[in-house]
Image (cartoon, rainbow, N blue to C red; front, side, top):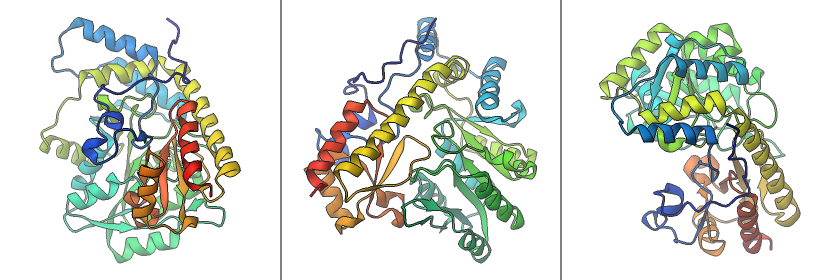
Length: 393
């Protein structure tokens, strides 16, 4: 069988499919006709190898308790080795229904109520939610923008806060959502060295690791041999192959004691086997989906180039941060001098766009908007034209 789902210009109607992105606007207080480019899933059909595997599973008609076999791990191992040069072992693997679930398990496993957990805002908003919801203290090491709008890490502030706040856990976003940074090896090494010095465990969310356009993704545990004993690495095919609704993530924990504590928390949560559909889709994607992914990666790269060029030529008041990774772009609207409420109103009601407002990623995101560009280019162009109509003046 050859790959069939390579037409990314095709607009697929997702309404009426229980899509969080398209079917729940009114329930979330948004206009029904707002064009949604917010939640991070793609508007493309996944690899035809995945849909074939799921169809075969559905035809069997029995959906009982299931678990993965050797072929599943071999698919994971092959993808990680080929795409990231990372040799993983089956004993390190714990499967979860999602990475946010894994973050919550890690927080419970490695910290106590009242302990400090550090993140780098503006960052994926569930990071702050799982910290606060589990009774831990959110410690922020804000990313710093240079004069060109690109983001960097303040290492002095990072270490000072680890010590002052007695931080026990660091949640790293790599590549970073929403600012689009792909951290260099030197940056990751500096973070890892500081954490090792102060006995801080690193949870590395690498869900966007396959979407790299500039630089190279470095799996955190491979940056230094010693880092593997002090971290957990969270991976998933959900972004790479548009499988978020199937709820499957693969968490790798090399350190036996850390793995034991994490597994105990998963057990205490009442969770055991992941769903059959997620297992089937993940295995098929990692085994056979390379051609599809390489094609979608090129398409999204060209979308990012198109967006940057369009904004620079047509909407001088909006600045797009440097885009090194992920399929999410980060736009700076601060030159308009609008508070967040008015900015949201203009985007939602004047432009008719449903985006992710920057303040949900922390106070450091105020004045920004996150846009999902994993959509047909005609949709992206329509969204940018709507922004132009409201903000070009």
